[in-house]
Length: 417
Image 1 (tube, one colour):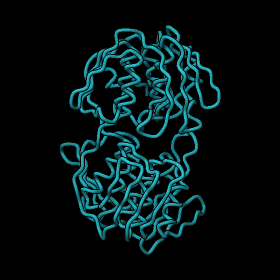
Image 2: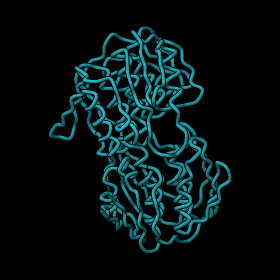
Image 3: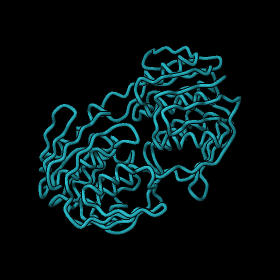
């Protein structure tokens, strides 16, 4: 199993390109199942979760081909099977996103209950309740969701909690349903908006995306389209925090500034100088960061996927920072590993109190989930000596060429096989 060995103490300087957003690409790949025509996608990141999804789509019967520019064509004209088996679903919770498209187009689906990061409960009951409200008959048998419906019917669905994948699954299912579906308390994340853009380009009728009420008028069929995946706001935020921690000076290209407002505000609060122009974000940090307080919440509030990275920054910041996690109950699993590097963190319930220290010290640590992995990389960049991060397959799920990009900025990161 691969490891990352990181020599700390280098200030990040230079320019890198941001990849396409994993959390937008995964549902958009599944949207290819909604049409018999070809969906062409550009700016697809090269990640393990993307490879897993493509393998799953290929198993179902989607025809997949790459073009010479790195784009991808997906054609689901004839599906070989209407099933997502456990061995392909167990490593990635987003696999549940094939349920809505297969069911609404073919009238039946068999999808394994998903796996993924152990960061807390992310139940699929809201997906199931929504599909049942649209007329689906759903049973859970032997770890599989068995769903049937002659044709889904439009419905008013009020989700008790904001759920990104739930919103995406039900929105895709509603595109081919009979009548109008209204999703209330819907997720507003940019990745949900990007999926809707793709669906509309395929002929779907969707209004209200980006608000908490989405209205979908079902159509008889969707057609092929071409779509470019939006930039990854979490990857962007991760490199910005890394530059702030190392008192660096970096430029990120092919990014998106309008999806990162709260993250940029917190970085400015920490002392960073930030300039945005078009798809470029420049950050310069000349002083030790100031500790910041933050509270995670659904978009447009502070994203839970950036919580661990800001905790890493608070570990070496001046002052005391309070971090409250409201989305996932197990998302402080990186704390114990950061403490091995010398961090001073106290946990009380869903709040972490982080007292900044002047320096961390390299050690061997273990990644527990995707964003925790990233936070350990950031901590290692400022630690004295070498830090070895084990179980980095989590990092490969969500960060494209992470060691190459950091080395391009002057870091000393090497992969150990």
